[in-house]
Image (cartoon, rainbow, N blue to C red; front, side, top):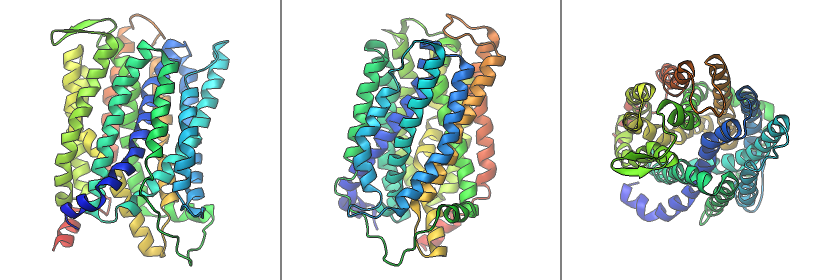
Length: 448
């Protein structure tokens, strides 16, 4: 199918479907960027306890996501397998996000318990809605060209969600408080998911499709070598996103020393406004980067494109590690733009290739369990981030809420935001070398 036909046939459907990616990106990034800063630096929760809660949360995700995927695979309704969970999960998900920001403050232990319970409820609803949504991707877009085109539109909407997360959310939390910020963001999340199924009708489930039990589904999914390779390098990608988002407020406040209004490019801006620019500008620049990669990926293959994107990440991460003021920090975040665009564009098209391969071998499709297992495993990035944050902050003697940190604590923040992502990129490169799909020779064969 030509690009012109894709645009005329599915432009509206691709756009409304991408509303779900705006919603999940907004919720996920605000959670990753603000919630630990809120509980640790604002409410005074111990970093070790917060790290423990985050680690348990990651473990729950590893159990929760496959269960939700299996549930959607086995669902039979007039609306389809996935759409009911999107329609009826949108508003409860928005409410659960709001309640993350309304903890009682009677004692640190009550705050910690509330943090754990609110995360548990939010993530259960988030996982069910997101997996149902993502499982529709291979059905909405069936060819490589369609999938890259849909992924591009999805990620442009995701960039808008990221901008809201990194610009609007910090400004709201400073101007109207974290509770109102949670209410406004929660409402936007609900609306984003509610528009997703507009104009979309799921294909009927084949009458001869057999429901497979959870254990057998897990055995089939984990028995797929392409899936095992994919999920490791996707996990490494997820860690990069999480650690950058989680460490940004600490990096801005203590490494770059931005704690009060300052003059930037001749304009006086508050600390939160400067933080918003540090990642807002790079995320805006990912939009043209996505459009460029959209033309390149079908020619060189998704595997090679991911490897190149990994390499392009490293100089920017090194600059972020060594930055010491607003301007060097901004240069570092702008330098990671090409890598950010690849990390946004390719996961769903590459996982769809793995699912297509499984369907060819077994005769029927199981998007839910594949997306559920992928979601569960990559959420281990939360545990990785929680463990690293707790350990490094403790070893480097980070002090919650302090006006300044010791040199060791500052280097701990530098290590977390710059060096640990580079380590994860190296691990993902090892997995990508062996990944069997998305190779350049496959693209040439398909075009012949």
